[in-house]
Length: 429
Image: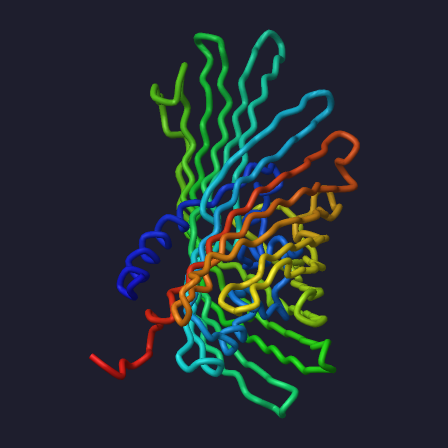
């Protein structure tokens, strides 16, 4: 694929990803939604790791220092299908949604030394829909609560790898993050009586901000069969500026028949997304198996958003994963098949009735290489599929409410063949 075609495709997909946030969890209605660590599909099926992740081919969205290890150009795209089974009392419901999860382009400025990347991924997701019916004193009302949107992150990263000695390397990376996104929330109370006035409240919040992320990666060969890797990331705090528009109207029968505007307000708010620290280790055993472990922490206790009375806490995430290379061609022209398993536990920044929201999940997936059999013209492209099964728990509501989630992932890592490498000068016309 020509470089111009990559740029055109990337631009179109960035626009699509910016409007593809999907979540159908009631918990996403709190704060700025469910906050996500930037990962691609290969990382998700390894338990969401990334701080010390150096793949044999492909990309890492979590640590900007990764680019120093690049030998090829990579275009990475992810798709996700979300499913939730929600139980409240004796009532059960299943919700589904799907969309793009990220789009990213990485390329080596100088092979195995300098790397550059840019792309778009979600920082938070909001998606919630609730319909209830209530009867009081012969009045029946239908209550609707709806929320959608989220905050995206557009990133630019630059990294440099250094050779420490014959057994060790060190890579440093710096990333600029530019956040933007819209969150819309709607509430309505509709009465079935002919003379009763119903009520509709609509709130739209557009947020933007910017910050930086520093990354470090190092690896050392311990023996002929073992290589140890470590990773560190630090994300600065972000001053999030939010413009809020809220309107309340009364109506009869349907939203179309508006009677009067009861309230209207515009306001400007500022919030601070806290700093985040991430640590990671990896242990590669021979050419077959690699183990990964990540830890991330972010203190949201002082966060506030749109003048709500919600409370927040420290967000921590622990992920572990293992990857096995199933098959490798002796001619070295194709990457191996990959089988990945992982697990993750996350204490979210959201609190409900003073109790922390926690999620646990297990992941499984595999990667299929797409390589040319023509020597000196191979590609590092790969298709990855995976699944994640987990649940949310909260001590304040576990007796009345439960939520299981089941996510399906599909990732496409595209790399041009050697004959199409960027920044390579032609020796002959």
